[in-house]
Structure formats: structure tokens, C-alpha cells
Amino acid sequence: MGPLEGKHIGFLGAGNMAEALARGLLAGGVPPSLLLACDVAEPRRKVFEEALRVRATNDQRRLVAESDVVILAVKPQNVSEVLAIISGPSRAKLFISICAGVSTAFIEKELGDAPRVIRAMPNTPMLVGAGAAALARGKYSADEDLAVARALFETSAKVIVVKEALMDAVTAVSGSGPAYFFYLVEALAQAGVKLGLPKDSAVALARQTAFGAGKLLVQSPDAPEELRRKVTSPGGTTFAAIAKMEEAGLKEIVIRAVEAAAARSKELGR
Image (cartoon, rainbow, N blue to C red):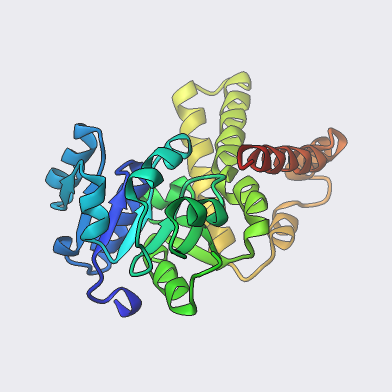
């Protein structure tokens, strides 16, 4: 387990992303006895207790007191309230925040006492062990803290490290990114129905095509452009489709959409 060896890890907020992280840690060999979850919602506590065999509580101060690493996984609008409850001497703890749009500077200020903070932006495919996550260091965190955060997220995601100023771009590309691909699959399925396929067949074909293309993209050494070229025979069916997409300016539309997501992420962080 490396950097995670023997560390008590607490989840302050026990939603889907916290569950995904916990499942990844358990699958990676972290004993359930080293994990603790905290949530105001009893159904979420029951998921951890009954499905994961992980202890759960509704006492936020207890969670912090019993943890070496605290995962801040509450809703962004509740961060201030939660930080006010747990603020105080905190240098002995590592705080890893997955709260979208919340800066390390804000968390440091609210907690006080020069806390060690790492900010993370994971995405929902972590739920199936295929996530992407970016990490950014706070002012008082050390290399060892970054190593702990990396080890934690690598149980269920591909991890990169960026400067915090780039977190809005990360949010727009990979945080929101899964929805873009879901949207494309919706469109593919609708096109299949329009061409006469039964809806269940169109959806099945679109879903499997997305899965296969993604797997090929990850496993192939070829760049996306080269993979596309290999499927696009001059004058063929794929060529006709790509030409129509280019005529409509699809690539520029995607770029503008991602820029809009980044701008909104910046607004939410103010």
C-alpha cells in the first residue's frame, strides 16, 4: 500500500464519489478497520456499514479526530459550515478535498493553523474503477502529502498533478467530460432509431461502440487522430459522416462548450 500503509482515512461526506474511493481502497488491500465515513444521511451511512463493512458516524469532529487523512467530500455549498465545525489545530491531518470549485486557500483560511491540503478533481467513472483525477497542492502540503493523495486516487483513477490555476480546465475536460460522451451516445442512438433500428438495439450498439472505442483509445499507442484516420477510408461511409461533422463545425462547438464549462467553474469558485 506504500504511502497509505497504516493510515486511518476518513470520508467527511459519504456520497457516490466517497463510496467509489472507498471501494478502490478496499480492493487495493486497505483494511476496512482503517476507514471511517461520516454523513448526516442515514441511508449513506448504511451503505458504508452494510455494503462495505466500513464504520460510519454522523459526528464530524469524531471523524477528524480519528483520521490521519480526511477526504472532504461534502457538497460545495456546505463546505463553509462543515469547515467551521471541524476547524482548529489541524497540522497533524492531511485534508484532501474533492469539493468542486473550492480552492485550497479557502480551506486553509477556514481551518486555520496552516493545514496540509490537497485539492482533487475526480470524475464519475471512478465508480467503475476507470476514473480520471487531477491533484493540486495547497500552500502548506508536502511531497509526502501529494504521494498519499496520488496513491489514494490511483486505486480507481488515472492521476495527473497540475497547478491549482488549471483546475477549472481540468473540471471542464475530465470532470464534466463524461457527460459529453453520454450526450454523443444519446445522439448516436437517436440517429439509429431515425434510420429504423429498434430503440433497444440502437442504444445497445451505441453503448458498446463507445465502450470499445474508449478501450481502444486507452490501449492503443496511436494518437486519437491516427485512430480516426484508420477508420476513415477516403470516400467511404465514415468519411461522409466526418465531413458532415466538419461542415457543421463540430470540433469548434466542442471547444467552445469546454471553454464555457471552464468559465462556469471559475464563476462557481468565486
